[in-house]
Length: 250
Length: 227
Ligand code: HEM
Ligand code: FES
Image (cartoon, rainbow over all chains, first blue to last red; front, side, top):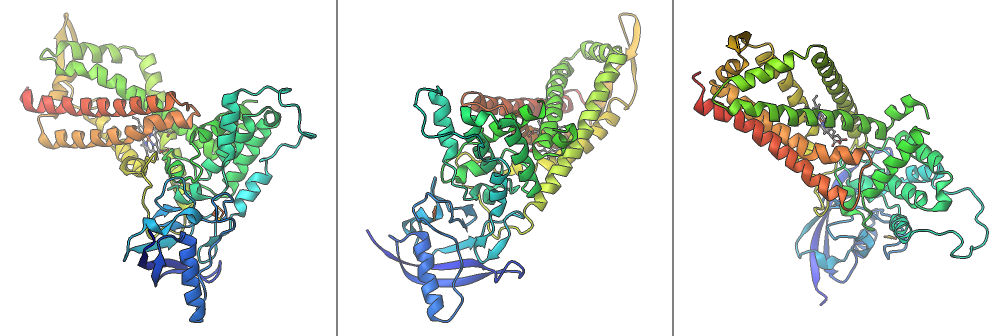
């Protein structure tokens, strides 16, 4: 049942990467509980534009939870309280009339704020460029049974490949560690025969790049897994470590 | 890969924390088992045990050196990792909560550096209290050996000493409640059955060691403090 609710929003406003930002309070009226969180922000932005104010900048693309572009911290939790949900798939029915909602950007040294709620996540791209691929020619689709892959391994690789690279793991980690992201990417490839060939170089280079980007070290708090919209398990972090140790003793 | 590169990496630093932390956790368990002899009314078994250990000579010194080196490595990388992790988030959140579910974010995980530093101060004091504490002698089987039992009983007659040990052992339990399972995860040991198992074992070790180490001074304080 659709309801209309009124909300107080406390949003991080920051003009550009160089300026220092601050939390600013807004009031939005008659928000439909059927809206998504981002649609609610769209409504706020229409209001702001009509008043001649600068709209709140935030990232989004697919708005169906598959691309990894959106992401803000809502009341202290990356992507908000709902399990396995990106912020574009979070609906206003989970909020109460009169509630105050705090909205902040991902916070990490490696993810500098560009404007308002938008952060620069190119650090992830540089990590991927350092080894998150296979460089052998795979040709056209091979006969499915020519390389046998245990079902468990292909399932696990698929679980890891579900990572959409949104960065909620970094945002939620008390250490701003990128280990869940890098762990998922390393695992997805190292579990499959095609990825095993370059496994050692990949683990070495991706971990080195992750550290060079100044993400923190994982202290096994598991907050990342709890907020991950794709529910990626920290078993991927352990696998990354094993791959790294294998590379270290080669 | 250069060996030095490994220990400069975030993963390598946590590997060293895990190995050194686990060796200390193992020591704590052994130390506790040995010390249960303090609960006996007869001082002889404990004194004999202490005498046996100090009689090991070179082997004992080797173990002591390894433990001391482990602790220094643990301390060094704990401080380094903690400072680097803080730098990784220069601007804090206005509101920060835990999503709950699998997350272990909480008191133990966010106080590792503080419980740790209080523990190293405790360890230094602990050694001065007993190893370098008051020396009494006693005769066992016709030999003059140190009466460490008396030193311990005398020490815990004091309520302040007892209270300090109780508090420190709560902190040890807190540190280990996250530390033990975390160390296995840092070593890359994770599995569908193994991880829930080792998490429970780690928690149990933390509870046994801290409750055990709390029970000994309390028991001595209330039953034999006047020895
Ligand atoms: C010198 C004083 C100490 C300091 C400053 C210290 C600090 C720390 C810190 C910051 C961590 C990393 C937290 C994490 O990764 O979750 C840690 C982990 C650990 N500590 Fe300590 N600690 C100290 C003493 C001890 C002692 C005496 C023990 C055992 C009796 C111990 C056992 C552990 C274990 C098992 C870990 C887990 C390692 C891992 O997660 O890989 N620590 N300590
Ligand atoms: S906008 Fe694509 S996942 Fe949210």
